[in-house]
Image (cartoon, rainbow, N blue to C red):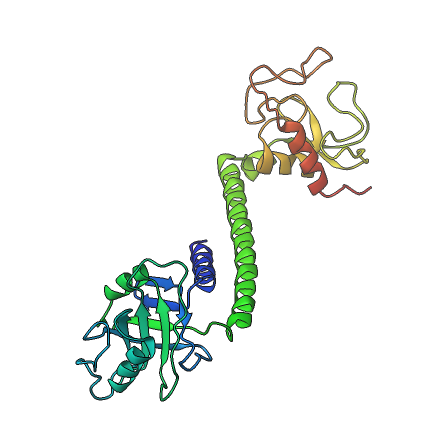
Length: 316
């Protein structure tokens, strides 16, 4: 059950990831954020599964002059965060490229809605660049220079059909897992209920039942206790069949009443008197109530019907 719930939670998380609106994604341990962006019209388009790297802050932050914090050696796919203003977008991106950065994320210096498209001349520009809002830029600044957090720039269009398929599959899988979780939980509750009911009932021992009187059926007696049919399986008695006599003097097929007393209830199916008693009980008559005042069971008729269906039918 716990495993199913965990899987379901992971699927819900997958759906949340698949439905993100933005193409700039920040991902790390217990961190997942996405931001809306607009790709520059003068830089190479992002293809495939996107680009990722560690985010750094430009120095100077507007990148309108050569950056002082250049990439040294084989850095881990560095991205640079730049603020809008002072100079053109393409100048900022060229300075980031000359400093060795793989991509430039430029954020607005004003609270503008919607995001503007970055325009410029593409001459010599080989790195990617996107534009995000002022609020998104402030949030990204809190995660700069952290190697344990990845910044992703995803494709705007090429992955969209795949994303739709992934979302559809995850949604279907989430529904299936949810239904399986509900069914599994219901089965567990049902099993626990059955076990509790079984544990509550303590039937008579087989040795005690076998010690009761028995006889071979010959014909119907005139004692109001022996009829022509067993009250449990409702089958007529056949000559020579073994009948069990309960302390209340009612008689049944031995196989029927033995199963009743050991597996279902410990009272007579007819008069409801406790079959475990050793007190001499007078034979029943027309004035004997079918349900005694000292024991009543509203479920006895259901139990008798269930037992009649489960017991083998005596043969002639």
